[in-house]
Length: 332
Image 1: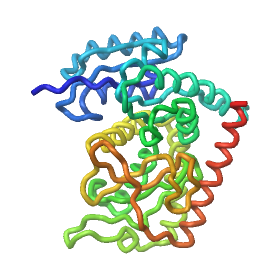
Image 2: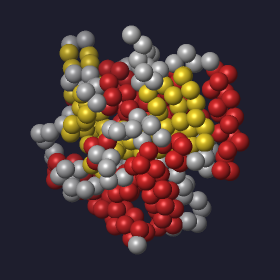
Image 3: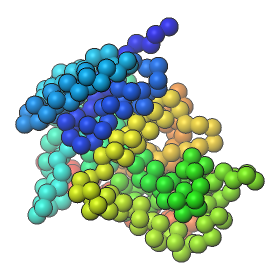
């Protein structure tokens, strides 16, 4: 029996990430090859013409799963009835801008979009925030959409998770699909902690710990971490644009695993509302290792955290607490 279409909202849909993301959703990369979708695309009025161009291309691509397209500059129209919201739109930091300036711009954007979701989205709508500062934007959204359950508001750290998998697979010259259970802890910023202490690689003689195979703790504790932390900046330097293809792909991965479940024995990294696990202050949106089942995520518990890791977890939590304070100061 044919499934009912799922309504998926993409904000900032005329931008680089949006342009890479909407065809992936329409092709079934996000929700599976048998799930019809209706795309809701939102952007700001100056981008209305470009947004209409994206809509024309979606029509021209004749995606069998795409059952409708809403392209609008009106937040209420965009949010009405949506089951999944991917919040890509945000205010980018420009040269000479202070962090507080960027934060206050994003606070006002996420405040208005949160209230539109609160009033008009479908019940149990799942929200993924991509726009930076992603963790804190997600927190603001949660603040202004109180009837959306906190477990339904997440931010994207899957891009960092995938970058970590990619670095390990290149270092060991193995398939990336054979590497699993890296963790991104904390903020989607340069304080995040890419952790391989629990990661394994599938080998002909069974699963082996990454540390055992890499045999280079110095690299794992230094260069590997900074490469993942600063990968976004390296891509901007090379491309003169920020990561769009990889960000779109990892947003699809995030939603797909959340909705359809993670494979047995595998966890992924998601920015979720902290309940105090691993002594991370409750009330932050913080990246943890999670497993997903039946549309729900659950933080992986009981992992050993060594002293080196503890410092890294605390450092990124401190930054998130500062960001939270800064964001809340912009509310007053």
